[in-house]
Image (cartoon, rainbow, N blue to C red; front, side, top):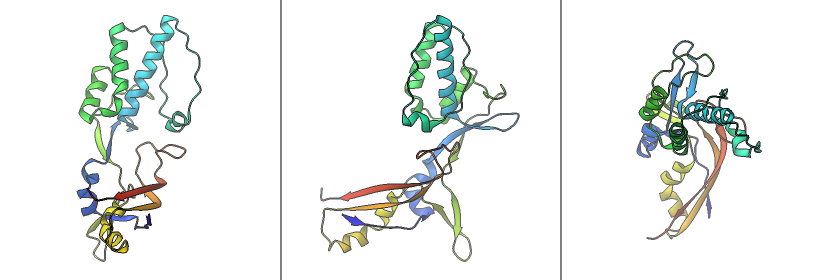
Length: 213
């Protein structure tokens, strides 16, 4: 396996080709009065979970408190207060179905859920804006004129791809071979977390394998 160490600055063309410029984004909503920002899918998830908890409280269903695993601790979603209100069985089933596929919704679909289920800002009760796409990459301008667009890399994988010819040459033109890289990556998270996940600067390891097909 070959070790590779590539630049943290990646040009616009590379990340445009990989789809990051157009698609490496999350959906955010804002409080219409004070401008507080929420990540749309996390907010919907937190509100629906709170409503389901309120339904169980209203029905007298007592759940044993479960110990949070590490992933839950690091998520640290916005907490939404639950209120003991009994829901129709069909509504409970609908909420559970939506929670099961929360990661698959597009921005417009999240907007529909927010509107149809009267989801508001948990802090103020104000209405929310329509979900807007927010690209997670930190942009920069490089070169003496400042006209060359670049980004801090959101992951290290592109370094393997753009240096493939050099890696192949270093391996004397032979396939298969593998390359590995450990390095810093950067993502402009809407709601950065504590811990190893969902922070703006983190270290990651990626391994690329090239073989004859």
